Every structure is written in C-alpha cells, then in structure tokens.
Image 1 (cartoon, rainbow, N blue to C red):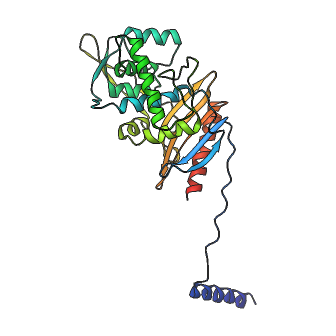
Image 2: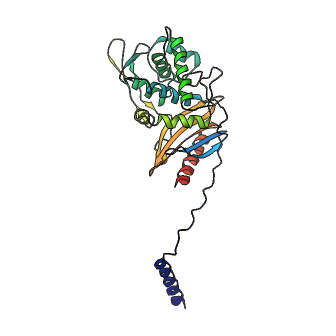
Image 3: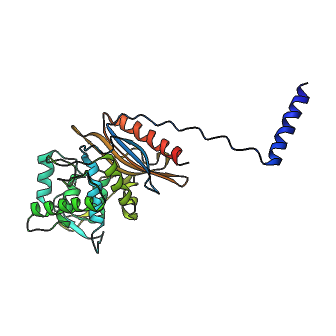
Length: 292
C-alpha cells in the first residue's frame, strides 16, 4: 500500500511539472520589528523607498551623528585636497576641555591632513577633528566666525537634501539649544554621503593610525583610532556613525549591503548601547527580507 501511494504522489507531481501548473509557494509575510529607540527609519539604499518608520519625522537630538553632515560639507568643497595639512590650534584644545568633549587626542601645533581629520572625526568621534575642519572650511577673520560660517554651510546643505526637520547649531552634535534632526532626515543625509567613495571608505574602516607632523618637523605616530561602530562587518554593515549623550541617549546612522541588497537607516534615542545594537540588527535583517 505504501509503495503504491508513494508512486502515485511521484506520478502526480511529475504530471504537475509537465503541465507547468505548479506555482511557487507565496512568500511568508515579513514581521515588522519592534524597536526600543524612540525614533527609527529604514530605506532601500538603491531606490530610497521606505521600509520602516517609527516617529520618523519627530525632531530629536542627534549627538555625534551630526558629524556625518560635517564630513558631507567638507567632502563637497570644490577643489578639495585631502592631503592639505592643517595645524591644530590652541582654541581647539580649549574647546575640548571646556566641553568635556570626545577627542581624537590631537596635539596643538601638529600638522594633520584633511584626510586624517576625517578619520579622527568619523572613527574616534573626535570633536577636535570636527572643529579643526569647521575652522578650515568656514570663512571669517576669527575661529568663532569661521566655525559659525561652517555651521551655516551645514544648514544650507540640509536644505539642499530636503532635510526639512533638521537644524544644526554645532559641528559635532554638542547642542547649543537648537541642534536637531529626525530619523528620516539623517537617513537621507547618509544615503547622499555614502555616494562619496572617500566617505564610504572612511566609515567602514575599523582602525586607522595617523602619522602627524610635529612643530619640530618630526613624525608623530598617533595611537590607533578605533571605530566606535561595533557593528561594522556584521551582516554587511558598512557604517555610518554612532552618537550618544546624556539627553540624546544612544543613536546610530547605519548602512549595510549584502548580496546586492542595500539598506540605510537611523535609530535615535535608544535607551542603551545594547538596545541600539539590537534595534539596528533587527532593522537590517528586516530590510533585507523586505527587499527580497
């Protein structure tokens, strides 16, 4: 009996194949994840289509994810030479001390290239590197004037990218009362920034060792800058920038590509670093499943 039934099943299946009547089973619905972060957004990196949103347009503090815009403005400068050397100023050191800001441990008087400053800012989240870049590419007769000018360029760039719920009042995310963005806006920014091969190379780098030039002309080998983004390499993760602060909590702008599928997103105001990581992993996994 068993043999006959099995044969019948094989015969029936073969007949179905022969007639072409067999259709693929419908794909299982992908369950929308729940995230801890107060705000989140995910898009298809290739098309820009929305894949996930949670209070995606609510304005929130951005912490050091602000530095994505700082890098974007620098890399958008005409005739940019990444090997241009910039001298670290005492004003930069004073700022880091006064704010208790995160630092790439740059030394006053050292000459550092623009490329190195970008690595120090995006990997180590150095506010000293960010301020040095803002001073370099702003206009004006004083450091304060040039930094203010640079922040103006950040806001102009935000408008050009249709970041309608964004305003910057700092180059590094240490808010002066009016520094905010949204998950959707920061994801738009990340998608634009990742089109730069230089930016993409920098943010996916796990560790970078800079050699700077001292006042006396000798070479200083800096301690390696380790990327604060511990998700790099996980499931195709390529970047982009972490952020954290007492009010902003834990933030991450991220991008990932696997098997030709690309996702870009942002989570803002997660309650802990562990929750931020878990949220992003959920969103990346979900995004791949939605695209496929």
